[in-house]
Each structure stands twice: as structure tokens, then as C-alpha cells.
Image (tube, rainbow, N blue to C red; front, side, top):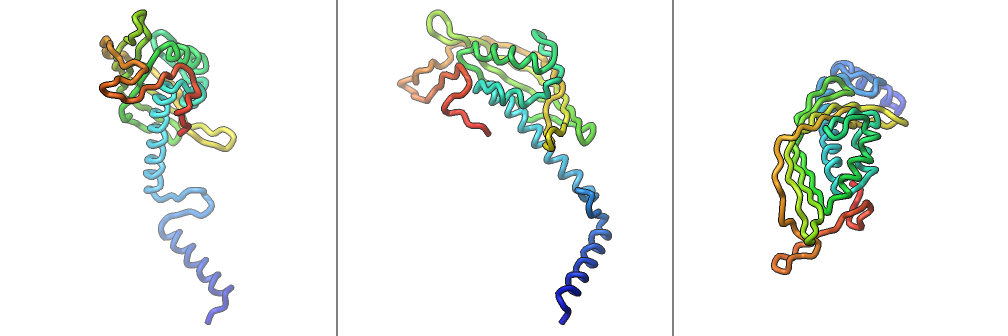
Length: 208
């Protein structure tokens, strides 16, 4: 029977041969197999998609910190009513959203093109509904449809790498009046719960 040191040495030699045969490199931090690049792209796509969903959700729950985590502070934003860096845009958009009695954002699955390992471009469609409290106590506003043209960068800060929006242009496609929105008290004939979200920190909000 071979002694443990001999067995370990033989195992190491065989493993090294297998790795070299498959074009894998030890100590590079990643395998050079082309499948690795494809796997990383799938991971990056999912991370970008998660940011897009976080963008919608943090607006609707008025989570200012969560909304800020979707953009790099120096991201260039073009919304028509605002053109400038994200760090200046965030207070404006959060104040606008908080002025609404109710808000609701939904963005489609994005089409993403990777320009490099750390940059990407995407486009997706979005629908937004919101309303303000009227003098008669009702809630009315608009239903809006448009497109989001985004640029992305993957940056590393404090040893942590993540994707965020580095530039965004919004395009308005259509707008329709939205009236007779549900009030905050449940309809006795169809008593689904409604929440009044007029500031961050709602007890039902969870960080996901």
C-alpha cells in the first residue's frame, strides 16, 4: 500500500495534469474555460436586472438609501425636468415621489449588451402610475409609459464589486389620465388592503 505522502503527491500530479489538459490555470482566480466567461455574463445580467427591480421598489416604498444604491453618484441623468449627476437628482426625485398619495413603478426585462467585463448598455420599457390627493378626497393622476436607456459600470469599492447605473436617459412615449384610484380605506365590497406610504420606513417594508 502506498504511504499517505506518496498518495498525496500522486494526487497533486494527476490533478495538475487534468487542469492543464482542460486549459485551466491555477492561481489566476478564474478558469480560462470559455464557459466561465458565459457563466459570469449570466451572473452580471442577473445583477443588473436586480438593480432595475430595486429601482422600482425603492421608489414605491420611498427608500432613499435603496434608490441611491441603484446609481453611481456621478451618473449622468437626463429626465427632461432634470439633467445632471445622480447625487443631485436623487433628492429631487424622492421629493417628487413623496408628494404623491400613491405611486407604482414597473419596468420590463431589460435587453442588455456587454461592452466589456465592467461596462454594459441596456434598454427597457417602463410603466408608472401615480396620483395626488384631490380636494374632494379622491386620488387622481396619470398612467405613464416610456423607455429607459441606461449605461452601466461595474466598479470595485472597499473590495466589493457591483453594477450600478452610470448614465440614464428617459424617453416618454405616452400618458393617460388615471382617475378613481382606490382610497386608503378598503372597499367594503372588495376589501383588499391598501397602505398609505408617505415616507420611508413603512413597517411592511423589508430590505431585499
